[in-house]
Every structure is written in C-alpha cells, then in structure tokens.
Length: 423
Image 1 (tube, one colour):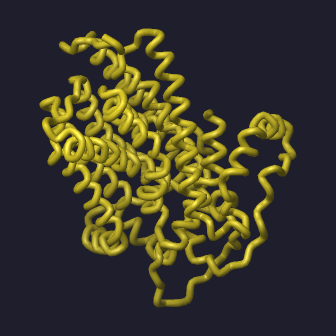
Image 2: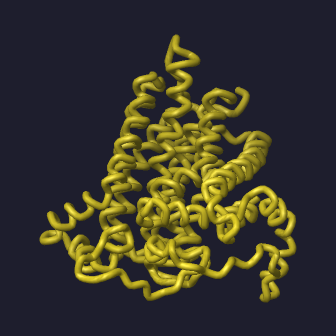
Image 3: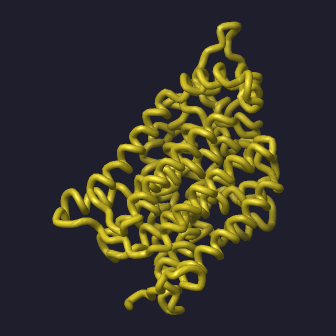
C-alpha cells in the first residue's frame, strides 16, 4: 500500500497538479496550499466522515489532530532527512499558512473545550477556510505590499525583494524591463521529472506553448538492477493504475489532467483506507485506546500521501511547495472536520450537538499551536532552508510530542480516564 501511494503520487497526482498550476498561473506555494493539500488530504476527509457518521466516535477528530502534528513535524523531518538538496524557503508563504493554521487550530480548541460541537461552530470552520482561499486569490498583491512595507525592518523580506526579479515571472507577473526568457527547456512533466533548480514548478508556468517530446511509457523497464526488482514487484500496481488513470504526462491525455487529478485522489483515498483498516484492526486486537491509535498509527497512515508528495517535491528543490503542502493540508484538515460536523448538526441531527469524548484532544490542540510557532521559528533560525539539521530537530520534537500525548491519553499524565474500543 505504501508503494502504491508512492506510484500514484509520482506518476499521476503530481504531474496533474503541475498542469493545473500552469493553466491557472499559480505559484508553487499557492498550488501546494490548495490543490496539492486537498488531493493529498482526501484520506483525512474520508476518516472524518467515517468518524462522524459510521463509528460515531472521536477517531476522526483524534486522527486529524494527530496527523496535524505529524504533518508539521514528522513530514518536515522527512523532507529534511530524505532530501539530497537544500530547499530554500520564502518568508511570506510560510507566514501566511502558519497564521491561517494557528487561527484554525485555535477555533477547533475553542469548539472542543466543552465536548460539544454546535452547527454554528462547525460553520465557522468553513468560513475560516473560505477566508483563507480568498487570501490566496489575492496572494500576489498581498505579497508585493508586505515586501514593500516590511523589507526595511525584516531581513527575510529584504532577501525576498532581492529575488523578486527572478520570482515575478514565475508567478504570473510581467517584468517591464524586458521580455521573459526561458533558459531551460521543458519536457512533458516539468518539475517532477527534470532535474531543474529551485524554481522548477514556477519556471514551467509560462511554457505551455512549448512543444515537447512524449513521456516514456510506464512499462519501460529501468536500467538499474534494484530499480528493476522494485519495478517487477510493483508491476501489478502499475498495470492497474495505467488502466484506470489517464497519464496526463503523455501528449494524448494532456487535456485530461483534471480527470487524472480526481481519479488519482480517489485512488489515494482508497489505498489509505486499506492502510487505516489494517492499522485499526491491529490496534483493536492489541487493546490500544481509540484516541491513542488516532494520534499515532492512524495519523501517520492517513498522512502517507502528504509525506510522499512533500518529500518528492522537496527532493526536486521546491521548498515552498513542500512547506505549503505541509501547513496548507492542515488548514484543509480543519475543513475536513467542519464539513461532516456541519452536515450532521445542520441537516441530519438538528436536535442536539455532536459529542466529542476525548479530553486529551485539548492538549493535542494546544500542542499544535505550539508546534506551528516552533516550525516558523526553527525555519527562521535555520536561515530559511530545509536541510538535515532542521529535519533532525523536527524529528526529535515530534517524538517528544507523541510520547507526551500518548501518556496523557493513557492517563499516566494528568487526570484523563482511558477508554478502549468497545467499552
């Protein structure tokens, strides 16, 4: 299942994301915070609906809050440790996404403090996400304004101003001093197949009119021995995906990129559902409390697409897209909680609020807000780059947060009674 998610992301999901970004003229950070976050967070949405309508427990809430800590610290650690290149980051996208997520996490903390969710509280989550999308629509203008306003007193904005000439054409702006010049040729799948520089996605945004060679067939056998073995083992998965998803990297299917995006997101959800199912049965057999499962194994399981997608783009040098996917998918996860809550309280069960059982979630929500501040501060102190040093620090902090959360849920720390599935 892990291998299947990797193949779906690398061969279908990320290439379709690139073409969507090209057509809409999105910068890599906005693309990461919207389409990439929504597609890779589809499993969390499925889990939230299952928790609200099927299991009627707190597994959806604990999974999403637990996966949020994993997204912020665990995936950041994976991007730093598993990437062979140092990814540079911009100040504004990270600040924008961290601020949006802090507001979302604070709203969820306020909602679950009384263990009841009312319809107007869930509607406020949808409103917050709507405001976030509105900010993204005017992202370029806001970015320009903040750069001019704060560049004299903030070094990170000053560096962004110095790189502005390079970045402007990449996000749809026009440089009046001269025409846009493409220094690198673009093949059919742009950033995800070519070994380009830091601005790979962005440099391909204005290359729609270029004619490129067709992408190699997925059944082409690799030349390296280890890759051949892995290719043979994954051949059933490759065949199934090839028969069900149009490969938009090839010229014939290029205009089917939205179909590719939707079907690959559906496949990601289905594969992750099997992962969650396996993990849930294992936890129930071992007598592990439901909320502990949500904070640990289920959180990591449902975040597999986020991990794979972020590491893949970080290895290509797209730091802004990786971080915007990490934080932006968490903002989308808050929407994942709001949608089933709102549907259930406003249309299905209008007589009363939804009961949220786990008091340990309050500790988790507070930990989330702290971890957001830590990520922003750590990136700032690390010189606005993702490297192995930042990855190591994030990994250590994630382990600390997870251990403390588990101890709290098990009642070892604090006064929190433990509930096991079925009791």
